[in-house]
Length: 44
Image 1 (cartoon, one colour):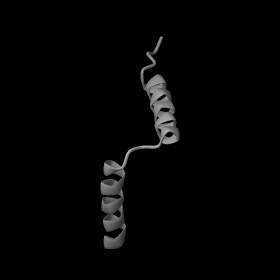
Image 2 (cartoon, rainbow, N blue to C red):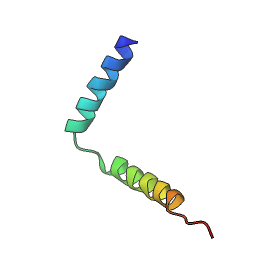
Image 3 (tube, rainbow, N blue to C red):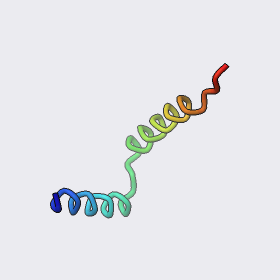
């Protein structure tokens, strides 16, 4: 359990400090757009 938490912390620190490649940025933008379109719908 401690190894999993340590691996997550190390991954977060590394991922936070390295720039995202363009394909990952595009994928994140698409995922955020889908999430926003699902959550912003108003009931009629």
